[in-house]
Image (cartoon, rainbow, N blue to C red):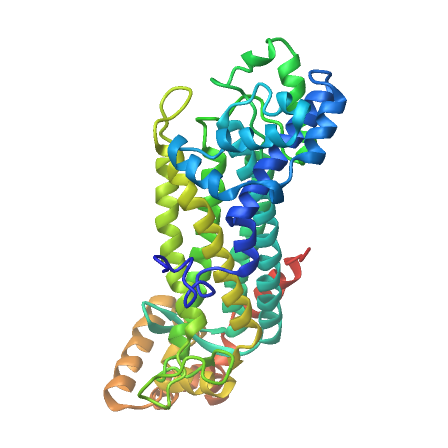
Length: 451
C-alpha cells in the first residue's frame, strides 16, 4: 500500500521520474554505501595505511548481491542507522581482509559520502533535463521573437510584447539556474571523512588522515573539503534550495501557460495526447496537466527547501536529529525537480501557439494598449505632460463609447494636424511599439549554450 505520491503506482510518475528513482532507491543507496567503503579502503592503501592486498580484496568481495537485505533492514531499525549492520556483513564477506573495512571511519562518514555519490549522479541528471528544457525554450524564443502578443501587468493589458520575448524571460532564469548548478558542484559535492568527532584522530593525527581524505575524494571524483562537515550542512542546503528555485521558475512558466490556455485567452494549448487532460463529465475539456504538475511541484519543493534549512541548526560536533530531515527532503526534492523538468520539456516541445488569437486578444482594447506610443509620439510637439493629458482623455472617451483609440484620436484636429492620419495609424498599431523585445529574445537565445 502506497502512503505517498512518491511510491504510489498511480502517481509516482507525476511526481518523479524512473531515472531519478533509480538513483535514490534502497539498492542504489546501499551500493553507494558499499562504494564509499571500498573507495575508503583503496584510499587508505594508497597512503600505506592498510595493506594493498586487503584493499583489493575489500573492493572485489564487497557485493550488494551477497547482502542479507532483510537482516540489514531489521538491524537498521534497531541501531537507527544502516552502516553498523552493513559493515558487519561486508567484513564477513571479505574474510581476513574484513578487519580493514571501515578503518577509522564513523557512520556519518559513510552515509554522507554515499549521499554525495547519489547527489553527484542526480545533479548530472538534472543538468541534462535542464538543458533539454532550455533547448525547447530557445527554439520557442527564436520562432516567436516577432510574434506580437499582449503584455500584461496586474492581469491587465499593459504594452505589446512578443511571445518570443516572454519565452526568453522564462529561458533567462533557467540559464542562470544552469550556472548555479555548475557553480554549486565544487562547493557542495564533497567527500566526508572525519571519524568520530571529525578530527581524524582515529588515524593518529598529523598529515596521514588528511592524505587519506584527499585520496578518498580522488577515488570518488568528489571535492576534498578543508575541514569535516558533519554538522555544516550548507552544501546540501544549497543543492535543495537550488532545486526549489528551479522548480519555482518552472512554476512561473506553468502559471503563464495555464492562463494563456484558458478559454478566455485561447492563445496556447499543451501538446495533444489522446485522453490527456480529459474530464470525466465534460468531453470538451483539454486541461493543462503538465503545467498543473509543474505548479504543484514548485510548491512542494518550497516546502522541502524550508525543511532543509532546519538541518543547518545542528549541535556541536554531531547533531541530535536534524540530520534525519535530509533523508526525506533531499531525495524528494530531486524527484520533484526531475518530474517538473520532464513535464516542462514535454509541454514546451509540443506547445501549440495560436498567433491569430494572440493578435485578436491584443486588439480587444481597441488600441488602448499603445496609448503610451501615441503619448510619446505627441510629446516632442506639445510636451510630455500635455500629451499625457490629451491621450488620457482620448482613452477615457474610447472606453466609454466602445470606440478604438485611433477613431477617437482621429477626430481631434490638433492631433491630426500635428501627426497626420498615417502617422497616427502607425502609432496605434501594436506591432510598431515593441521596443527591443525581439532583439532581447534573440540575444537570450544566442547566449543559451547547451552542453
